[in-house]
Image (cartoon, rainbow, N blue to C red; front, side, top):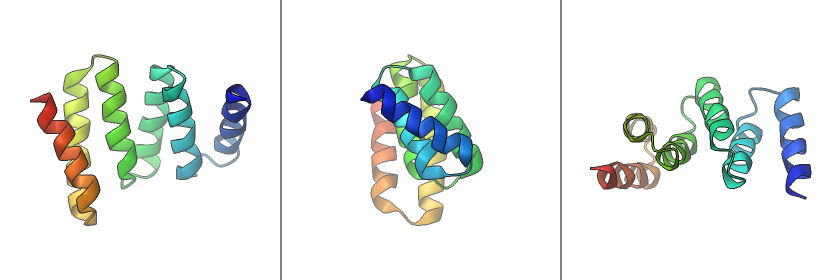
Length: 104
């Protein structure tokens, strides 16, 4: 089933590369299956296509942490704080700030 879901999400992204929901789903599917570099590729593409899609910053930062790339994670969280502050999403902003604070 997971590989089927992965194939469906890949097809959706190929059909419409700017579909933020499908690309986010693909990134999360990669992340959940342990394909962290592939997940980061999708999170990066998502942020490029839709720079205000705040979950990409949070989950991208977590993925970078799992990869041991802490400075990159910190930078992504900081960018996420900016995005969520500008967009007025206080809940997402506080999650991002909390993750940033935990990195020290």
